[in-house]
Image 1 (cartoon, rainbow, N blue to C red):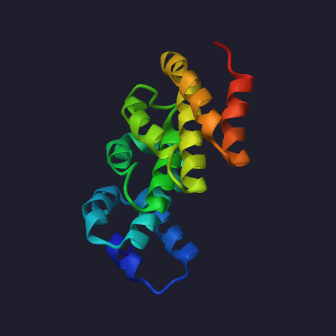
Image 2: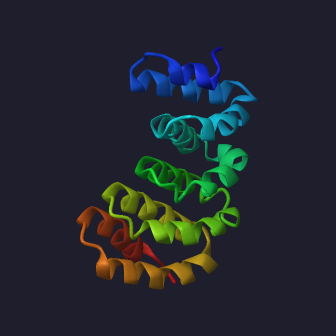
Length: 171
């Protein structure tokens, strides 16, 4: 099996690289540590592949988040938009499995709700509403924030994430 860095250097199509990354992360116990070790040594584009692989894995297996949650939260406000949106989606994927651990992600996610990128804001909305669904104490804190965000949000897709949540919420 190739290493994480070898996969990143392959001249494969993006989807093939992503599939290889997901496979190695699922099969090799040391692969996540390798990913974390090489993350700061690769380009933003390669970092995007790495976070996207974690997003795919946590979508199928949210419990994988216990191994990478601290690492993911660290990069929630990274300057590259793709890193912001992938990390937000990871948080959303694992929120129900780790409702107490993701609390530290909330200030960073709220900051991302003001990002100029629609995908970043949409992903932050997804994560925040998933957090609210999984933790009743945090839900009470987040609902007023959602109302403030809705007042300033221009994009209907982002608004709809909050509106759908608020429609279904029981206080």
